[in-house]
Image (cartoon, rainbow, N blue to C red; front, side, top):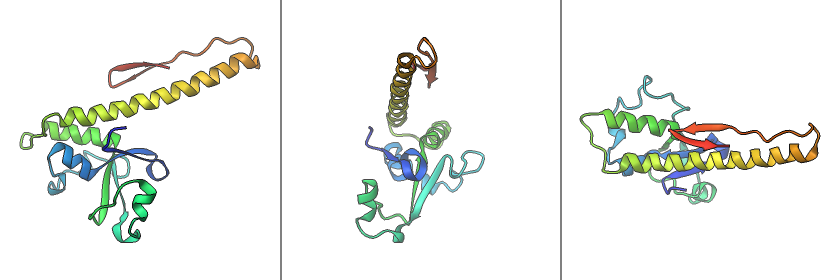
Length: 158
């Protein structure tokens, strides 16, 4: 898994990119842009969110639980992967700001890697379930199901 993508299933259903990691990769401090998190761009809680306040954790407790340091921020902001894609597109179109070289490709490559991993997991589950149906003969002799999925123009066979 890419270093900048974190997996926290019990809180927000999966993969996130911390705002501070996004800033370090892109080279653009989006915290300084007061209009960046506008409602017409993002949906709070769906595209981005934040951990509770820093003082609600004992030293070391956060790292033990999530695998990384909380840091110095009062509220630890992060993007869901769909929000990171939106943020990249906004910054890419912004004429005033310049992304670091390869920042777009780095983040999108990491997101595509996670998408492929999710598809592979679903393939594995579908393959197992299909074998169970065929071998159990509970439903008669059925042919395995074949599903085509396209993620970011990359065709995946399930």
